[in-house]
Image (tube, rainbow, N blue to C red):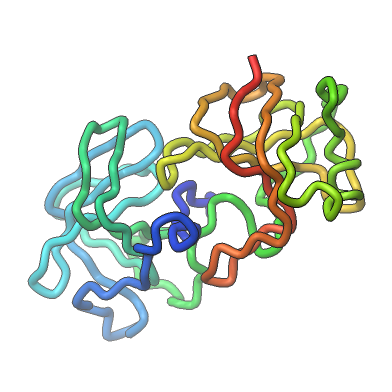
Length: 236
């Protein structure tokens, strides 16, 4: 199952408006933890599929990682996170209320799936692997990723520069872009740095960001980062 890029378990930290799905449920009798919805309208974007669905007599918007869907089809999903006044810049549209789901299926599945977290698992174990062949020297007055993790307590709350190759990008999540960089160094299992920024970058580009380091950042819903760079700006 593809990792769902939207992730919205982080919403509490930014706006405090995410909450568990409280949509009236027409749940599957075979699996009472599942939502059963019928598609009324489909809007495709480059990354996501937006669906207007009917559930228990009410119409709502849901979103999922881009996939084929058509009006009239019936889908099932387990859990969702609600977002108020979500703006899709690509669609130039604001959804008053939308529910982000991890996976849609045409058959009921177990309802015990985890809530979506596109940026990584608890305590900074990111959903990316170490990319081979990367060797990027630190920025001037900057650090390697290995050095940052080794001395993370020394840099908590400080603004620093980090340089690396982009290995993953999730754009326009909670009004920010989420970038993963690697430089070929590592400290134990730590080889990847997550960065939040308003700037956009391309995959595989070698970039330098300047931002503030946060340690043991807890976004709620059981998700936390051991280390993250926040509100970073791209250094030209």
